[in-house]
Image (tube, rainbow, N blue to C red; front, side, top):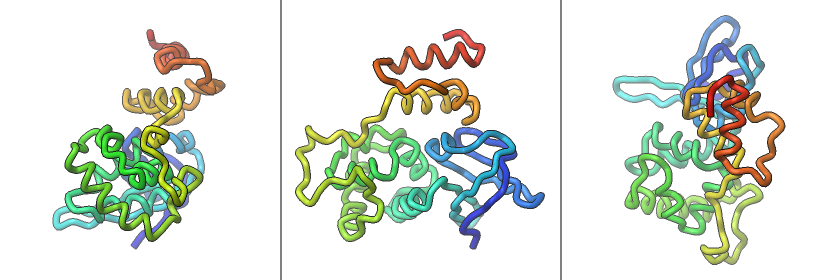
Length: 208
């Protein structure tokens, strides 16, 4: 079992990265979160991995952190959730955000993930909450306290304008390094996502 890889980035897209490890290229499926954390082509990177073996395939997935890999394991253990859907969830939410989403039973927030309907969202929350209640290691700084907050006071799915702009640019096919350069210097304060995207696209030589 391959648990981690250390090498240089040969190629990267919002959903895949190829890492050169001593002359051998390993292709890994990744989430948008991990894609945004990658260095540019040629950069040094350490990826925590998980191999998923099926009857007709053997696929390697990579994660920027051990916590993201652990959350991936928790997600694919849920009935009806495969690797593709697990990566979609991890592309939408950080690990602490997802933990909070589950513990506050925010099925509406969970259903905002592409491919996750209401029933799937409810099943994810039901199965994951039992696991998370016994293991707070994935809580991070965003975990709810021992007394759950009212749902209207919790915004687990909230992201900053820069996060939203990053996701949008990655979905357009730009590489993580291009996105990093395009949004460099912006903190998103007092700026709308639309404004950030317009500025980023100009930096990339495209019309807004």
